Amino acid sequence: MDRLYDIILVRPPSDSYKDCVSTNPARDSIDIVLAKRQHKDYVSILKESNLEVIELPPLEGLADSVFAYDPALLGVGKCVIGRFGEKTRRGENKALVTDLANHKNKLGEMKFVQEPGTLEGGDILVTGSGIFVGESTRTNMLGIRQLREYVGNLGVQSIKTSMFHLLCACSYLDGNNILLAPDLLHASSFVGFDFVSVPENEAYASEALYLGEKNVLIPSGYPQTAKHLRDAGYKPVETDLSEFYKGDGGVSCLSAPVYKII
Image 1 (cartoon, rainbow, N blue to C red):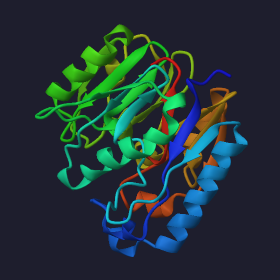
Image 2 (image 1 turned 30 degrees about the vertical axis):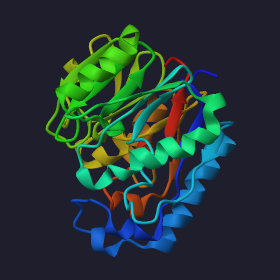
Image 3 (image 1 turned 120 degrees about the vertical axis):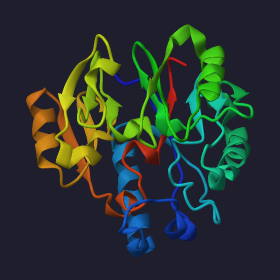
Image 4 (image 1 turned 45 degrees about the horizontal axis):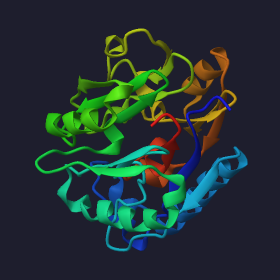
């Protein structure tokens, strides 16, 4: 398989998801029943892609915990447990460590980002030739330096961004290919890569998940991005994520791959 992971973690939304941290004006219209149904559909696609899916329990009272990618960078050799810049989410790290105790045979040694460093998964782009980390409002340089110390052999490059997460504008596909919203993040941030472009009015679709064998999971309703992927030789797989869009989250936020290269 040409993807960087074969194991992936997910956590379903709890009833408190409606209280998530979001700047979306439609946040107050989040439909919890629909969100849970959409999450189940998302998980079904992962399983159909021959991924081993580890389903963690929902966390009532931690509204954003459905966004499973953010608490940590997981690998088969080493795991880096981050420290949230968003203070209301800091309980997610501890809960994840507790849950991972049941899966030690699949994960590497745990390292922890220490105060005053902050590091959120949404700022981490893992590629086949290195790791890029957004220095953002959620992740600071002290957190990035600690990540570099823990996984320095992989090459960790920082990118300054005004977005709250780097992955709001890009996703790694395969080879030297990145799905990119160039109106949000300049291509010069990724030297040596080629790009599938996402139009400005479809920027939400730049947050995607490569499933292997040219299949790319994207949110439904973004026809230009789907066309650009097909033109580049990929096969877009679409799923409705309307309730997670309202919560400022997308395709890659909803799962945490266990990277084979880390």
